[in-house]
Amino acid sequence: MEVVFLEIIVKTKMAPITIFGIKNCDTMQKAFRWLDSKQVKYTFHDYKKGNLTAEDIKLWLKDLNVEEIINKKGSTWKKLTDGEKNSISDVNKAIDLILKNPSIVKRPLVQMGKKHLIGFTPEQWDIFFS
Image 1 (tube, rainbow, N blue to C red):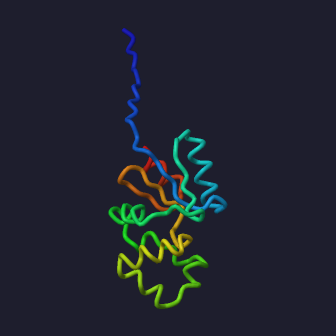
Image 2: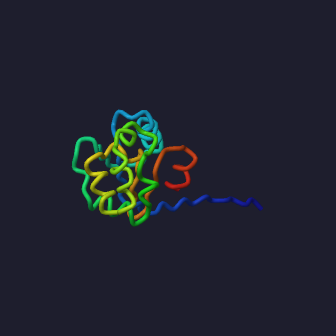
Image 3: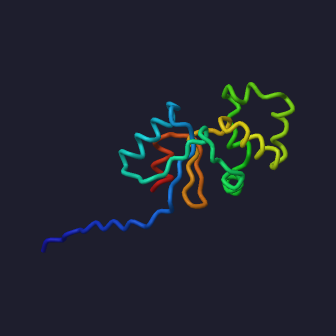
């Protein structure tokens, strides 16, 4: 008697994926290559070109905290005054600061429905997108 095993892969419908970042960033380029190699459909939102809204940031903050979102190692953060840096303890002021200085957001920032992921490592993305 021959036993045949069938592998059935059920793909669930994924929520729309938006990648927030800056197009020319090296890490973003790695992320784009990863997404393309996995044939993941996504929308790219270049927040340096504008159109970042307080509503976008508020949605991120439902899943992430301000400290996770802000890149304190980047040149944009380092150029801020101490007063501006200290203002992130107030969520509304942090939102205003991000809107005025979108380059302080870590990248890439992935939004898939209500789930978010910051940064890029292939292993982390394999898990997130599985």
